[in-house]
Image (cartoon, rainbow, N blue to C red; front, side, top):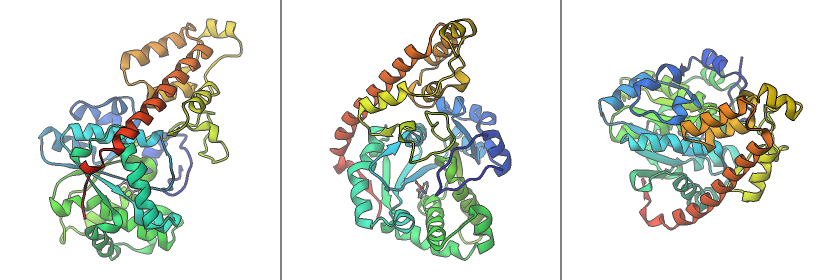
Length: 362
Ligand code: TRP
């Protein structure tokens, strides 16, 4: 059985197994129901979700719905998984979702010992502008800090009555008081928009966050009489691949992950060193073709670097035919990521200047 730990860090090998073990809904079965599904949904990078049919229906019928996600301001950098979250938020914003982005400052205090003040500064100086640089529309977003949202905290307290220790253990495995508080606050976040207006909602997150969705859905079922909330829907994306093809998100292999931001040069170098599906010799590769299915560079294209379907297909075909060899391809990838980092820096500086437009809920 695959393990999911929202506070841990490991990569998943077998996503179909995960779907089975945790009763998730494959995106494959649902993306046709969504208006204008984006490339992440079509490619199965956003590979699963919960409550997808209900969500798609509400969107098709143009009913009001919300999109909410959050960030722990725990470092000075984000990674490509965050870009995927924002791509999904962008998609839902385009489909008229009421959008909420929260800063999980209570969670980072409880689980990482980061002071509320520090969390606040990081969020204002980096996280929020980074999200905007990645394409979030700040004019159509409500931001909040967990610590300043008394509704979220009140919900967390009310929810604490609805769940037993054994249920906590069965959802999260090992659990401590700090994690219990954080999980309840997160359930508060997930359902909070419905205290303003009862409506369906979607939480785009990495699959590591799925235990929190499960908890929230259990709570909704148990608070039917008090609150009558809609069950929250979620979309789950895959983990960012480690460039060396390993299955661990280890701090000891910083060369396997590109941070955002990062010096363009360093990112470029990382791509040049990535594991590919290349053959032993050039002759062999020209004859047999490459193996993009096993190639971390191709996985980066697919998940993050090439949105256009035709361009991606051409890389795939040329590689398969043995026409595009790994050296040239890695240089292309390296250039793409260099451009990405340069662009990001520019957009980040610009986004910082839009601070007056950000709306905070208190
Ligand atoms: N737990 C999330 C993280 O580790 C942050 C978070 C808090 C969150 N509340 C949320 C994410 C609600 C999505 C929805 O980054």
